[in-house]
Image (tube, rainbow, N blue to C red; front, side, top):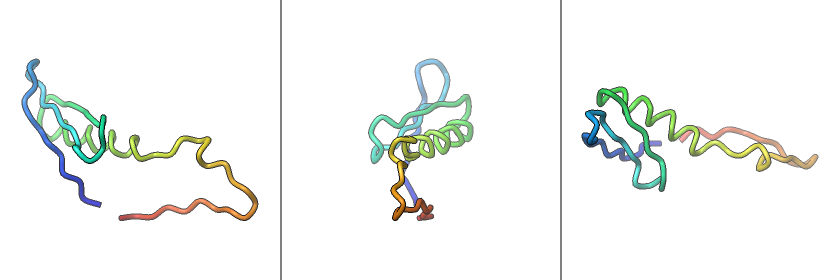
Amino acid sequence: MNLKIIIEPGEDGYFVAHCPRLKGCWSQGQTKQEALDNMREAVELYLEPEPTELFLHSSQEVVELAI
């Protein structure tokens, strides 16, 4: 999966990053690379399901899909 990330200088000297496709998914870092690394983690957490969403019935199974 490829997502477009916007990086811009923040007011405090940090770089701020966000993903327009994932509303409310923001991060920051002291460098552009750190902001991107932090953004990767933020996206992973944003997309991770809540434990209650994984309640399984006997006929269900959880699988991962890499995009």
